Image (cartoon, rainbow, N blue to C red; front, top):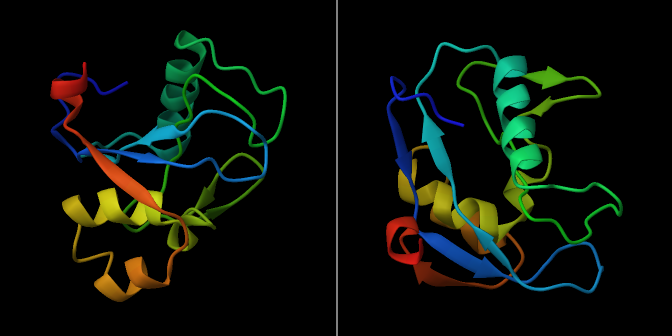
Length: 131
């Protein structure tokens, strides 16, 4: 999903219980920070392309899936359309988003934000270690 010419950083990988009430396996979560000039809709298309490559099915809302890519925040960009809402409307409610995001961007996510978010998670390690 990230072009070779786009600098990026990746948080550690965390395990969390699924959100939404559908019985399924725990999730692995991470945050990827990308520096790019691509517009938000292009990033959304790349995210959906990665999901399709991982055989993502959208049969049940918040149901089991092989990959779920969300765009959480883009510096200076807001969006409130059917396809993409930015910043992500539930990002600050979910610890599985905030903890890895804070690793990369402590200027955007405070300790208080993490403390007020819901959900438990545990560190699994780095993506390279788990690959």
